[in-house]
Length: 136
Image (cartoon, rainbow, N blue to C red):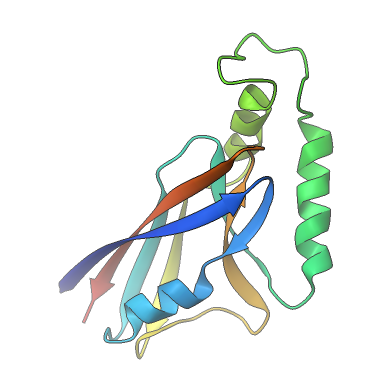
């Protein structure tokens, strides 16, 4: 079994979904069959596999989570502002890691699936996503 690691940075500019499917594809280009794990190193952003054909899907998801955990809601943890704890809540309801099968150097995603950083904070950030490939 071979292993490979990489860290990619995904710049964000406020709440929403930021696709990084192309960056993962570039990492896998010289790999064979195996499994890749994507892990985000943050507590106020998360990872999603979601539709990449219609941008309204991404907007509707962001709107739903913004309503579910509203910025400025009454919380004890407000150290970094009114979007701090709501961002942690949104991240806890989604994922911090994804496991994706790899075949012939390609992520085995469905036709309309893309990989996204789901940013929950208002301020711009540079989010780190760690990639770990294990396979042939």
